[in-house]
Image (cartoon, rainbow, N blue to C red):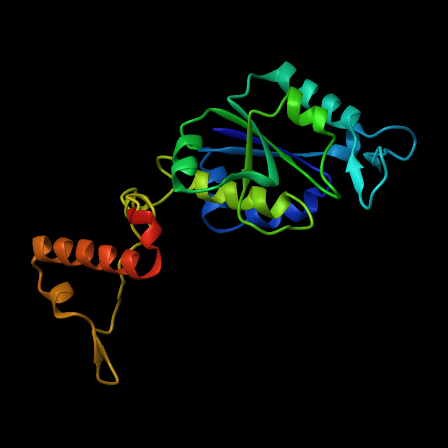
Length: 224
């Protein structure tokens, strides 16, 4: 998989891809992540990428021309399965979407900033608009990092135990059950005895029961 991220603030995205699971995935060549500074495609001597809104109003808008230049350059080099725009008014990101995106080959992500981007860019090139929640961030960079993390960890070979992702919360519209580790007893508090019984059928049944119970208590909407 290859992910190209267009951003006005590339430094914000350097850290998420330089550590832990995402770094290992890149080092193992399971995914390529390329950051593209939108200011490299800016207008004039000052590399302008934003301007005032037509009709007035607070907040600047990212200009159409720099976005066009960058997308056009990338599209000349390869075909993209999705061109995603991170925006609060997009579709809510969930595990189902992460699973679908993990099957793609080439993805481009455009990070909004200021008041957003010229609507014509959304109309012309964007194939999917994604929000990570009902709140507003300063820009789409952190949201893009969230999406990339959720997608990349699903790629074959990224996790040391490939079954781990299959038991994550939301994979079966259930929250994950409680988990425990050593010691089995700490200051008189013990783990459920079934988990140390060695009876794997009973353990799986317990986990499923706990997952359903937790989902009913915390996210009953997932069971509807």
